[in-house]
Length: 94
Image (cartoon, rainbow, N blue to C red; front, side):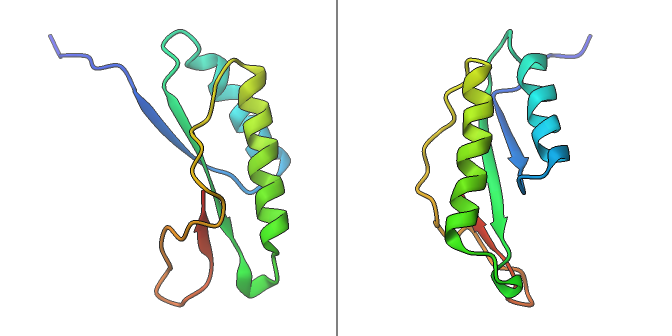
């Protein structure tokens, strides 16, 4: 028999689209029994002119969705640089 370890942390890539919103609304109740930590990651498309304000609005929308399901997403300062792809496009915003 395999040893089962409950999922403790989930990282969700979130751009703010209806599909992304639907994904949050799907996984939140799915894991409701064990309530793992769910972190939302928004990659800001600076090369496409996406503003920090838009990135922050996306994160707030995602957080609000999770709060409706009883989650308290971890607070990691918005705009924190998480990494850059080799072409220098995009920035991870938590």
